[in-house]
Amino acid sequence: VIIEKILVNNISGTVTAAEYPPVLYKDFFLALSKRMGVTPKFLNVPFFALDFLTLIAEVFHIKLPVARENVLGLKSMKSFDTKKELDRLGLKVKSYSESINQI
Image 1 (tube, rainbow, N blue to C red):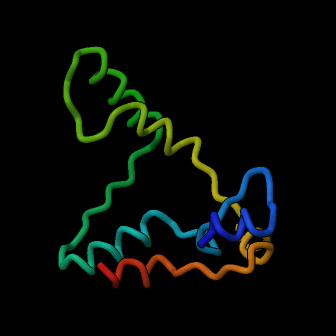
Image 2: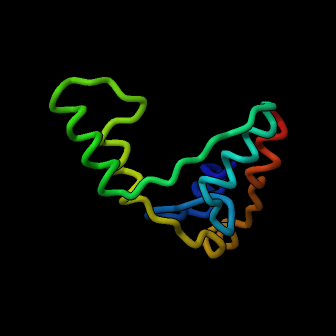
């Protein structure tokens, strides 16, 4: 539907279409784990400590559930205000909770 709207309306450039307002990872994973019937365990770790740990693991070829690349990606992640884009396209996207409930 999004691609069709872009083509029909001859929109060019970068188009960001995602739920507005942005969803925190913690909220998303809480909802997902609830839907799956499991209890998540969250661990707050300072960035520098996780970065150092994953760097050491990488150097010594120790396999961890996350790689340094994942950690750096999370650090550089930004949220975007998608309301203007969605309005421009005339779209309403499902909320993350609606999508999770369809699983």
